[in-house]
Length: 472
Figure 1 (spheres, rainbow, N blue to C red):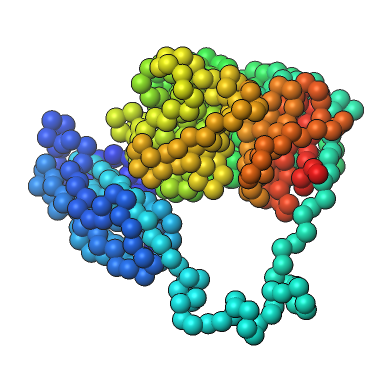
Figure 2: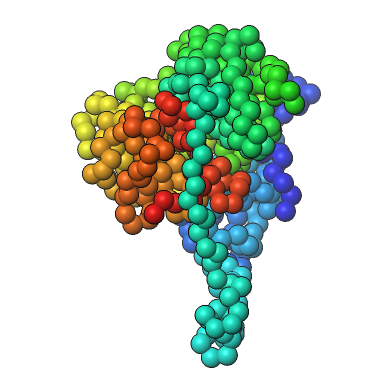
C-alpha cells in the first residue's frame, strides 16, 4: 500500500487556485459524511470493507478523496472497498480536498482473525497430540520459551559522576545513552563506558534545571523547562563529542498561558508517528513533524492543571493525565487541538467530586490498558473501551501514592513511589526490595525496550539504577 504522505501534509492548507475564494464562502474544506463503514463495525479477515462517503464542496469543486487504514492509502475516490488484511482495532480515515482546504473524518473498525487462525481451520494437525511432538518435553525444545533473564542491578551515583538530584524526566536514546533531567542539570550517562556528562546553560540549554527530556527516534534530543511565554525548551542535536547544537526553540506563541513543559513523549504509531507531545502547565501541546509546526493547546473542561502524563494506545489515541482528570484525544492530524475537535472522552479514575485534584503524575500503556499513577491516590488501571463510556477502571489499595509508572512489554508494570518500588506481574502487586534501592524512593522510571531483555531505569535522589530481569 502507498504510504500516506498526502494526509500528513494536509493541515487545512488551502489548495492552489487561480482565483481568490472569499473566506466567508470557504469553511475550511469540503463537508464529509462517512456512510460506511460505521463506527465500531466488525469484519473478518479477508472481508471486503465498503468505503463510502458523501462529500460536498461550498465552491462546487470536484473533490479529491483519499481513504486510509492505519495511515496507509487503500482507495482513492468517494466509494469503493478495501479487503481487510490487518487485524485489530483499526483507524479508517477519509480525506477530502477542494480549493478551500482539506478535511478528514475518522471511524474505527475491528477486524478479527488473521492468517494464523485461518490456517487452523484447514484441518492441519500440527498442534495436536497425535503425531507432531515438537512442542513436547521429549526431544525438540526449540519452541519452548527462553529462560527468564537473571536479575541484576547496576547503580550509577556520585562515584560515577551522576549528581544527587530530584529527577523530573528520564529517556533512553537509540545509542543506549540514558538522559536524565532534574534540578542538578541535564545528565547523559553511557552505561557501557560509565562516562557521564552534566549539561547546563553554558551548553546551550535555556536553564540548568530542565523539567523533562526525550531522546527522539530521529536521534535528536528534546528538553523541556519551566520557562517563560517565549521559550519552554529546545530541540538539539548531540555531536560525537557530546556537544549540543540548537535546532529550534520550543516556543508556543499562540497563548500567553503556556510557560512550562513537564512531560515529553513521541507518538510511536498511527498517523501521528514521530509527533512530539508535551504535557504543559496548561494541558497538551504538540509538535507535528508533518507540517512541521507547534500546535496548542488541548485541555478538557475546567478545572485542569499541569499535565505530567502522556501516553498512546494502539488505535492512535493520545491520553493526557493532568492535575484533575484523565482525558482521551483522537487527534485528526490537522493542527487543531481544540476540545471540540479532538476530545474523545474524559475518564473518571478516582471517585472524587468534580473540581477536586487527583494529581496524576505519570501514565503508561500495556496491551490496551492505561496505567495511571497519582501522587494522591496511588494507581488506577483503565481497560480501554472502543466507545465513549465503555472503559472500565480498577483501583489498587497499594501503593497509596505513586510518582511514576512504566510497562516493560513483558507483562510487568513498574511503579515508583516516595518510599520504594512496586511491580505488577499481571496478577499480583509486589513490593520490590533490596539494599540497592535508596530508602527515599523512586522519582522517575523509563524502560529501554530496544534491548533484550528490556532494561528498567530508575531515577532516585542517590542516582540512577538499572534493573535487568525480575527479582525473586
